[in-house]
Picture 1 (cartoon, rainbow, N blue to C red):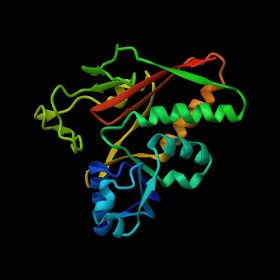
Picture 2 (tube, helix red, strand yellow; picture 1 turned 60 degrees about the horizontal axis):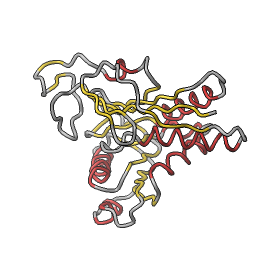
Picture 3 (cartoon, helix red, strand yellow; picture 1 turned 180 degrees about the vertical axis):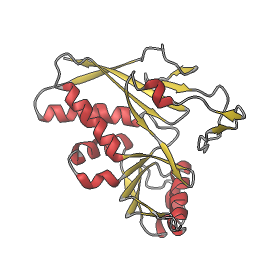
Length: 241
């Protein structure tokens, strides 16, 4: 049976450096193999001379560079597209070095949304509690917490197969299951050609859940974990009233 292509509207790729350029190249390969159909790959970077511009990728068709700060871009996207059904077919392509962006963008977009309503909500970042299941827990300078089930160094582009080469056995963990009772979660799933994405529909749904929670006068702490199967970053912020 012929494999039907995966249909996506737009990809939003974090960064035009080595990671972003690699993901663009892999998505274009999938397109050329007829495994993928999409409208555009939007690569977000504040540097007009990033590695993407020094490659042939911008001439490959359906690829564009958006000059913007990552946090600003996603915060603006959340506010403008919350009720736009067509964005459900978009996908966010994170960098391995920036999983905390979603947490920060959620905070900024929520604050701006409530300022528009003249409700004046704000947040203060705080370090998450460290009574969590994953064995590796590393506090970051940003206040977030890096988590991992791997006590070894994994390859950057590992697709996290069920049979883990790190232990030479089938893995028995799933980061989303470990954290779903602790926080809101967004999972980066490996789709094709080694590229992991988070569906924009899921991102917008979780942002909507945050806005609904903020309407509750008893709501105090926002937690968001950006995860893959084995690794993740957990951010936590207290609501200031």
